[in-house]
Image 1: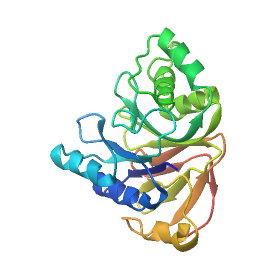
Image 2: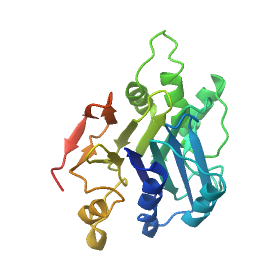
Image 3: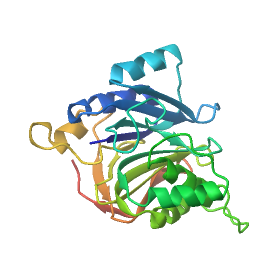
Length: 254
């Protein structure tokens, strides 16, 4: 079962995401990766086959930093458990990245169509089609109107068949994560001037969702919410002044 962790806030983003991924290791995985932006160097991606310690070594050898980002632990379904198939996945421009849990049932048909439109694929995964669909609707809308990242994700999700949860970031809309789902929960955490995309389901039992959130590498979260089925949830500060979290079903205070 794949794991998704995202962060927008004032803390150093890489340690926050790595610690979140570490708390998901018990679920099993075969590769891990992280993408961050916000420091003027565009979208930076680091990935590694195998355990999280391999990703940490990759980051030690080639550091990265930013103000927002997403991380992922992958359990391979489409494509071998290799570095190139590890998430996050980029679009053609390198300005959009996606992490994803689940299966895109119609990915081969979508991939064929996107290749015919000129998109270049570099992995064996179903996830990569999401990045190219978002690119198509976000960066190359073809009608002169540049939609928001949230609008582009909504359009991309309409093209997908399957059961999935996903998170997207882009350099063109800084300090924002857009999450969407069709089936598995996409859980959003709201703190004091910080925002989280938490695991695609909150652990239960000994590792209860409440305990997971309270032990997150951040101040205690004030609220958690689930992204509504079929919705795209826009997560991050609105012009740096107020929270902007849309299309959520609130689950109350933690």
